[in-house]
Length: 444
Image 1: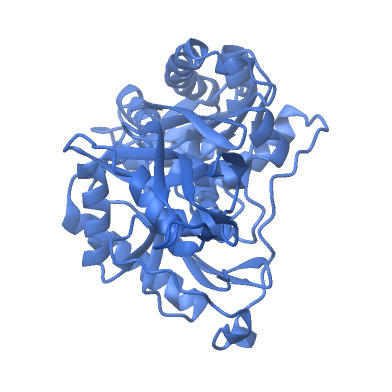
Image 2: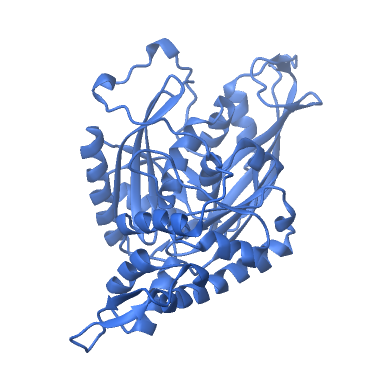
């Protein structure tokens, strides 16, 4: 099984919906198109109006198709961590032939043992999002990563199963299908983000990845390359915008622009002398507001969010992990957020920003992570994961038969790279200027 081909990631977020089209060939992933549009029909990461979401998906897909010069038919969709449950599962089957003798294990045996592991009954309101194998055991020999080609009489698989609310999964798939697309893969969003934003060592030794989204804030604990724990706070960047709107008595649209253009998450970054005009409801003339006052509004909400995260992470001793915290998502672009997070969480904090041309914004981490994750899956992981598809049949593919139409016509942008860490200290003003530029150009 070869990964070569065209992959499309779809991130259905509360504030914006994003799509990227990537070409994967010769073990290299190149982004050849993308789309980004304001969301409609979502609340706190959950779909509340299918028709509005469908229209937004159609819009963003059209953008991506025009940039990539490629028709999009299948997408990999990120599933939010809302009410996510992480469970161990295992299954066992006989792989002996009709005479009871050992036989060579093949992909169909892997499919059958996966089905056996998924027999575990779930509550009627939950469904399986993904299943990832930990190990296979053949005739008592454990620690096997890929049993195909081995001979045995009995095979067992131990795996991690991720389940979520059936309503969330159904609504996401329904929206994608009504937009004229096929769901090729569903990926737990924190897994995809961690795969892109964390280095191999950070995933191994243990790191907390925090996604500061518009509709909600998600913390994911990654250890031993596995997702161990998630916590979702139903407050995000939209709450900050609402606070600004209420306190300054201005529209939500104006509040969002003000947040992006003049906002700081830490009051020590802002000056009481730097002021900007605010269009106040019921007044013809704008009022002058200081950046320091705006920073106080933003900081108050972010402190509340981060303190709740702190309590949740302390309850599972996650803050003791050596990797510290990596921040990403739309609100990670606001100046001073790293320093504020370090003050409250008491550990080393870094910010991850994708390095792809035109996509160097924290808000694009998830959608890039989706295609990075699925193209980096091992063959055995793909077989296990796709067993969830009712009509899945494994088919061996000859690498020599793979071809991609018009590959030479595609633009050749930068290769997707893993996170690089700049250990040099940056002065506050320089960092602030950099992130101000991000906020002025991109949706949350």
